[in-house]
Amino acid sequence: MSAETVMTRIWLLLVGLTHQCRIGRRWRLVRDRPDRTGRLASNMLVIRHFMELDGRFPRLHRLMNGYIVLVPALLFVLGSVFAG
Amino acid sequence: MQLTLDAIPHSPPARSPVPGNRGIWVGIFCELTEFALMFLAYAYFRLTFPEDFHRGPGLLNTTAGVANTLVMLTSSYCAMRAMIAIRRNRSRACLRWLAATLGLGVVFLLVKAWEFNWNMAHGVVGTGNSFIAMYYYLTLNHLVHVVWGCLGLIWALLRTWGGAYSPADHEGVEAATLYWHATDLAWIVIFPLMYVLR
Image 1 (tube, rainbow over the protein chains, first blue to last red):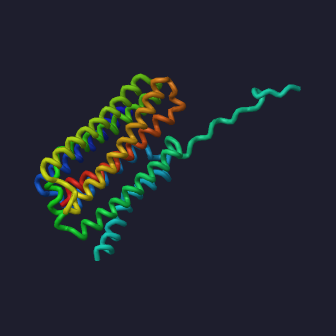
Image 2: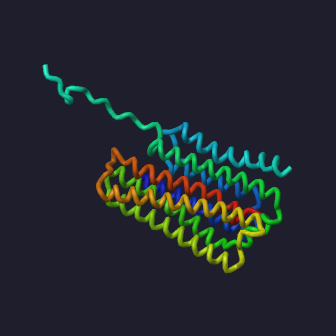
Image 3: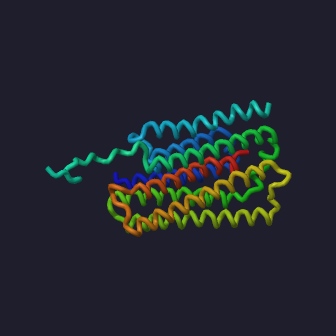
């Protein structure tokens, strides 16, 4: 499979995830977890395929993936502490 | 014996430890840290004023938000195609893909301007509502980063047009497109936080 085909499929998948998000909102399905999963998947796809942080740059790849997982977790904890 | 520079063996260029260059990664991590602090503010206000954040997304123009998400994703795709083209020594194709990326960046700015205008017409202003204040804080900051990204793309476009890049050396294109992807990444987080989650 050519690089162009892979990128086109990734792009279509990202567009699909965006529409899923919108449809979810319209039908009041998106509340918490499903949206977070879609967002996380979109970010991971952009990091891995568009930024090309895969096997060649494993440290940077881990760092970016850590950002998109740890920052929301940290926000939840700190937000709870401040609000409490 | 005459010593010339040619007699000194050339060492192969060291492989960069990061894609693009170190400078752009400093910029990307500064940008991500800035957004992390804003998301922290978002979490704090969301927990402090839950009613504002429950009603907030309903006040915004979701169509504009979805349109801009699709524009950002498509522009990232075009940026990736520009990278593939320059690696295959197709600088004219690279130029076209970079121009498409930049064009979509301008479309993003135009949609945002239209959306802000729509907001004003519908009374969506930042006073008295913490969600709307957070919305302007986050989206205006992201807009500034899109403008920086557009300037970077213009630089890469002009350098590509001048024949500065080759399959072996295209650091400028790589750096400009990486920054663009990081801006896209930030928008992918902002979009559901502002337009979807209740």
